[in-house]
Length: 264
Image 1 (cartoon, rainbow, N blue to C red):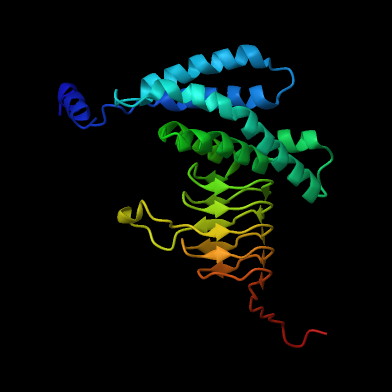
Image 2 (image 1 turned 90 degrees about the vertical axis):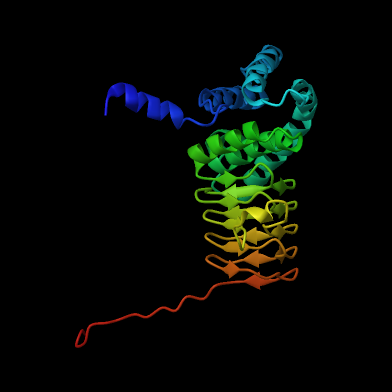
């Protein structure tokens, strides 16, 4: 096959007219600047707000394919939400500092805890998701996923003072609801019982009530599954039904120890 025919076949199969991967890089740059603007003491807020507005305009040019959608209003409305988002994130950082004996300072939480970073990007993305602007927030949380191993869909609803410890392998689905003062550990999945496209507009992921602790590698599935307030879910538990408030659920492994015969 000639080079011309190969090129023609490639062009014929590039069927997505809006698929521009430079959007990912621009979203990542926007996310980095947004994070530093909120937290880094040496990053000037006034100048960076102006720069963020310009960067967001570039994102709008790349993702607002429907000219009837009022994308130009998104940034103005989003900017008004940033102080409230920052207040929530400071509560998340304080919850981590209060709960984890390994922390040496609150600054360590902001700079060194992947769980906090994942929560921060989720909260920043969630507000954009609520405004009907889905692709940019999805790319923001995927950027955090790539860096931390934490996959939080921007559509999830998460309350105040949220704590993810160690972080790696955590998955929180789109319709999950997590209320205030919840603590989860690495490898936890809040997922769906079934995966089918027709379930798009249904609640597929569990609800976690206030003050619940979920230990490492627990899996909780289903849109009707509710973990009651003040409950403790042990490591490696597999849950597909609701748990009453003030419960303790744990997985008991079967351990068999084989010893050599005639060993003193």
